[in-house]
Length: 133
Image 1 (cartoon, rainbow, N blue to C red):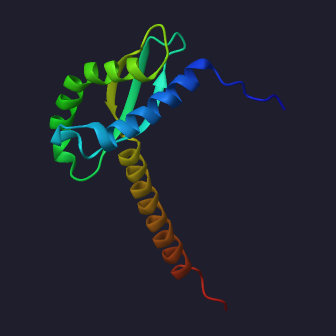
Image 2 (cartoon, helix red, strand yellow):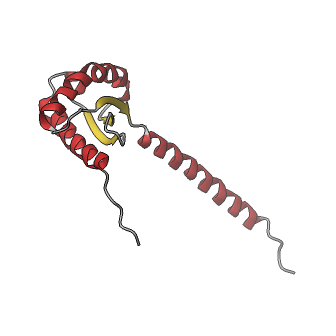
Image 3 (tube, rainbow, N blue to C red):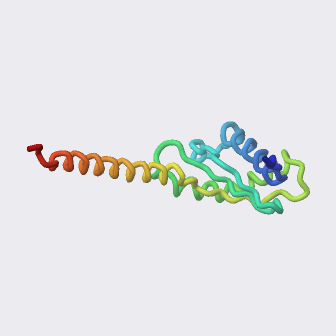
């Protein structure tokens, strides 16, 4: 079986993820960003863009405020990356809210409903079986 080769973009994404996690834990002064957790980072193969996916701990009503704060914060974070990563060109940073958890919860709800309907159908079918003569 062929071994997967790690691309430079993967290594840069991992470094950005580590820096972002550390920075959101210790370096953020904006109160709107204290509940942010980085879930994933994707870097384009040419290293020009980095998409940083994040989640918010706590209430989702805060998401519009956090989105705006992260948009303002992107330039400062890029400067932080420039100081800590040795790259000729630091990727442009875009923060994207990670909706995977909500999607997974919706799928689980649908599957639970289907299981419930299936068990109801099975019990109804068992009640309708003809009696032995």
